[in-house]
Length: 301
Image (cartoon, helix red, strand yellow):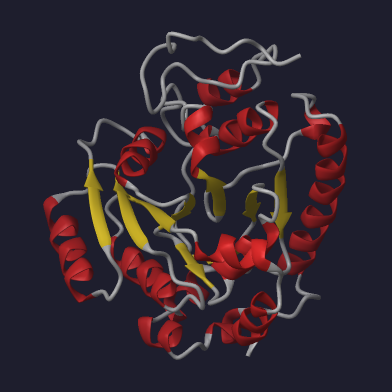
C-alpha cells in the first residue's frame, strides 16, 4: 500500500521528476563475510517499487565460502548484479565502495550495506527527495538479536516488514524523529550558507544514501585514507556540501532495518582525520583517482 501510494504520487509529478525517475540507479552494497545478511539485503532491493538498474556488491575481500554463496545469490537474482571483490587488507570500506563505483554505470549511486533491509519504497522516497540533484541520506532502526532472527527472505518477499516496525512511540522511533528534526534544521542552515562548521554538517550515512554520480566524481569519491571503521561516509557528505551539493535527510519516510551484529570499534585515527580543517577543499587526493588532477581544485570561497 505504502509503495503504491508513492508510485502514484510520482506519476503525478511534473516532467522533471519523471525524467529523474527514468535515470539509471546503481545500488552499491558493502559486504564482508556476511553472505546470509547479503541475501536479505539483495531480496529487499529486488522488492523495491522502483528497483535499481543494477547492483554492485562492494566486497571487502570475503572468504571463499562467502564468495561461493554470493555467486549463488547473483545467479538466482532477477537483478543485474556485479561482484566487485578486492583483497582483504583490514577494514577498507572506502576503497571497496570506490572499487564498486568504478564498475557502476548509473547516473545515481545508492549506497547501502549487507546489514540493511530496505522497506519497498526506499528508492522511490530518495528519488522524490533528490529533486534538485541533492544527495539524500537517512537513518535506520536497529534491530535486536531476537528481532534480527525473525527476518527471513520470505518475510521480505511477502512485504511483511511492517511486523518488525514498532510504533512511533517506541524509543527507537522517537530517536529517529528527533534526529530527523535536528538534521532538517541543519539542512536549512547549510543551504543558506554551506560551510564546514559543526552545526551545518549533514550526516551522509551509507546505510541508505543516494548521490548524483557527477557529484561523487567531482569530489573524487570516498577518501581511502579512512581505514578501520567509521567516518568515511560522513566525510563524503561534508565534502559534497563544501562543493555546493546540498543534502537532504529522509527519516520517517524512508525506513530501513539494521540487522544486528557486534559493533565494531570506531577508529580514533579516522575521527581525528575527519575533524581536520578543510579550508574549502572538497576533493580528496586518495580517492577514485589517486593524486591531484592537472587542474587542481581551488578552495571554495
